[in-house]
Length: 235
Length: 246
Ligand code: HEM
Ligand code: FES
Image (tube, rainbow over all chains, first blue to last red; front, side, top):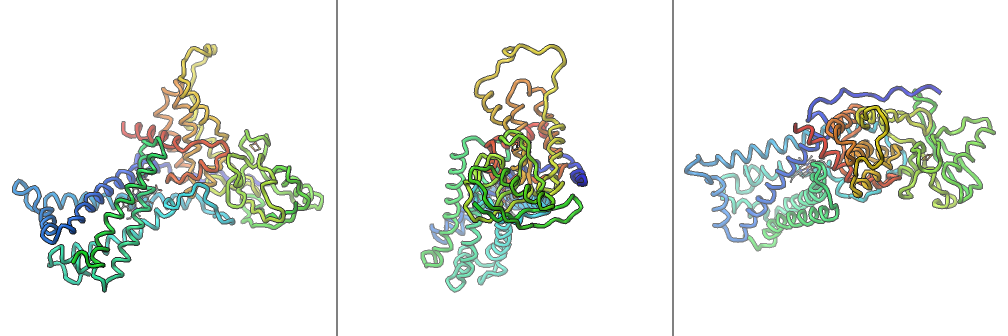
């Protein structure tokens, strides 16, 4: 029987971001930034139920907030830059950790691996994240830049929403709902996982319940808008 | 009872390895899983075949040697049980049982079901100890330890280093193993002086060995024969972040 070779030792990770724990901490913090954005975004969306003026006025306010002290769009642009940085760091870390994980198990099990901890949401994190990313790209092209919106980028925000989710574009709504379901699953695991990563996890039952409740409320708050447009409540 | 076994056979680290099917007859439900393999090996030896190599030592669930993945679950589906303590009554007569070694790059296969877990030793060497000054042993009651801390530290210290956490983790992470030692020592007064340095050194060694990162799936805790809780990992993360922020 020949001796096994010494375990393959990879290049010693350098610095905070070189370590898997550091990358996880970056994911947790950037994920939290994105969650805060989602909460604000959801609340803003719900203004659509207060009528076209209210919604358009809100959209206008996002551009002019802080003026005249600051030029228009200053705060909005800062927020956009912050969110872009957060998304890039989050994805970069996710890809890097996924590659490490793949390298750590070069030979797969022959038997079908039976998950012992349940955790369906846990197993959707990586591909679910990719679906979310594709959705975000479509969403920006549709409602922010208006490139794929029937009314185009010049129309008022409210009209873009109504046109974007028009009944004859039902597949847009379907994509939206599927992507949101992924967001819900992502956050159901992600919220408490982030706390665990940052070393704050105690009382798991309460934390997991809170993660589920927040995820459900967020998803519901987002989904009602296209559904309301579909069934003609918002027109 | 009669069973069909599909076992990973690999003749040394340079062999590619393959699954081989064996039939075993007249297995008693009271046998342990390892005794069942002993029956097979006895027959293989008599027939002039090479017996299946597997690690074992205490056969009473305390040494951590006997790891194998049974039907896709580390140590089999029976919770909080090492393979040596798993009994055949949990299997059905006529069942097919798949037996594989731990799968992780830092656990290279030595032969068949035997893997080299020296990477765990190197993680411990990196910081899983306390440096005690030489001299006479202090009185047992010289350093008071709160009861809750003593209990939690003891729970973490029950880790037998079997490697099931790595085998079960979809990321091939050694976080539960590493966190168990960090928790054990970090909860006790004797572990405080080196607490910060310990977390950093052990986490870095874990990465250097090629283990994956943790995504808090909880698979490790679920298969751990000692039920080491997941909050050990939160503790490790907290200690690591504290050092890193200095
Ligand atoms: C570009 C698309 C995305 C990808 C590829 C992605 C991927 C991932 C992965 C692989 C994890 C680690 C999972 C784990 O710990 O098990 C994760 C965690 C997380 N994600 Fe995402 N994600 C994406 C978008 C988002 C978005 C839009 C949000 C916020 C709304 C978000 C919030 C979080 C949070 C809070 C965590 C927990 C961090 C932690 O576990 O420490 N992610 N993400
Ligand atoms: S042989 Fe010692 S734990 Fe199983």
